[in-house]
Image (cartoon, rainbow, N blue to C red; front, side, top):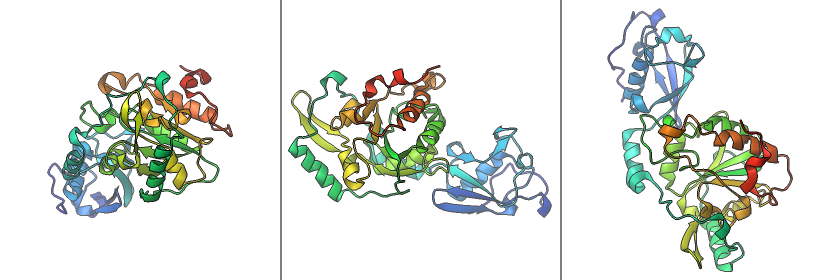
Amino acid sequence: MGDCSSGGGGGSSSSDQSLSIIIKWAKQEISLDQECLQLDDTVEHLKNVIYHKTGVQPTRQKLFGLKYKGKPAEDDVKLGELNLKPGTKLMMIGSTEDAIQDVAAAVPNNEVINDLDIPEECIIPVSQRQEFLAKIEKRVAEYKVTIFNPPREGKKLLVLDIDYTLYDHKSTAEHVSQLMRPYLHEFLTSAYEDYDIVIWSATSMKWIEIKMREMGVHPNPNFKIMFFLDSSAMINIMSPDYGLLNVKPLGVIWGKFPQYNSKNTIMFDDIRRNFLMNPQNGLHIVPFKEAYKNRHKDKELLYLSRYLKHIAKLKDLSSLNHKHWHRKIPRD
């Protein structure tokens, strides 16, 4: 992977025409030596050099820090037009084909089976059933949480699902950015001012890690995710009407982090059954599907940013009816 050859390079080979760049990718910092890049080279050439260094295909690379006339630089823009200083650091989000194949093997069809949902009027009071509370206690004791960023004093807690909440996981596109829910980064930046943020998906941890990297959610300098929870943090409960259900009990988080509780936690999910153990803390978000049709008109996260800001000043969220959240904020 260390070869600089990529084809398509241009310009003089003199040192005053060369450029050194550092790529920050995952936990690595990769130096692109001056002999690899010239000022007359294009962004496309830069991506090819990065590919030879990392194995991340150019089409899967998302580079932060390349601006041309106030907009993300297109592939045909020359590096000399970007006013990059020697040793400029650029953050890259992207995964190698091998990593993606590993996840595909771990999660069949790269999707979660979401076809069983529960009408809101049918949510049943199961939060005090001793057999379910015992399962939560077991998760608290045994489930290992990797903390990326510590809890902040005085902040409320926001727990977010991924598939159909932040990302259309069934549609196809040339780049993951086309499947991200509109306003995602703006939403997370705004929410982070008042809330610590946790990602909880009913998938494998590998799948969560790759999706968060590809979408530029983790790591990100504008908001800092506290930790991820995967499917193994969930529990099974038995409903007399719907049989065996797999749900996301917030008690797992509250047991590990006592500063959070029903009064300062809110959870977004497109599947109501996921917050069956904590219905008062759950907000049912409209699923984001068919991204190719809806990404230009979906404003759910924009409006939810306003709602989170509105309720952030409340001392107790447990008495709110999130079913009517949209009535409390202005809409375009």
